[in-house]
Amino acid sequence: MKKTLLILTLLLSGISFSQDAIILSKENANEKGITPLWPKCDKSRQGPVECFDSKLRRHILQNFEYPDAAMEDGLSGTVTVEFIINKKGKVEVLEVTGAHRYLQREAIRIIRAIPKMKPGKWGEKPIAVAYSVPITFRKPQ
Image (cartoon, rainbow, N blue to C red):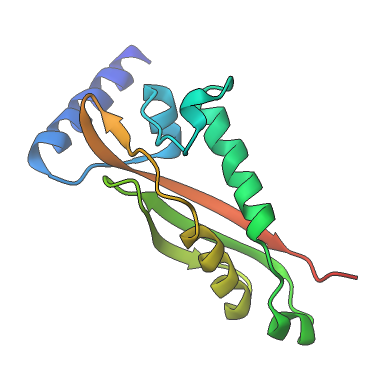
């Protein structure tokens, strides 16, 4: 286990010197404590990771609108949105998969509406952190 961590650390440090853009996954960012900071999470009693997760869930629920065209066609399914919080704290959608394009468009709209935040950091250097979020659309009864 220690060997694996050492090799991973050496590889990551080599990458950080050879490339200007470092992107960590949510899991790696959480382990290192460098997750992006959602607005007002710095004043929360929760840790930054827990606060980020709860604010993201709330954001999705509050901004969710079932597309009219999808409702008319009886569409449902799960859309997975892969995105990053970039070095400036802004959202960039990388990839969207699953379900119908109407549902994909709505999922993209929701994710793009995430507010600007303090970016993740590697030491003092701001970095991009990648996330993957599944959003399930069930036709209202």
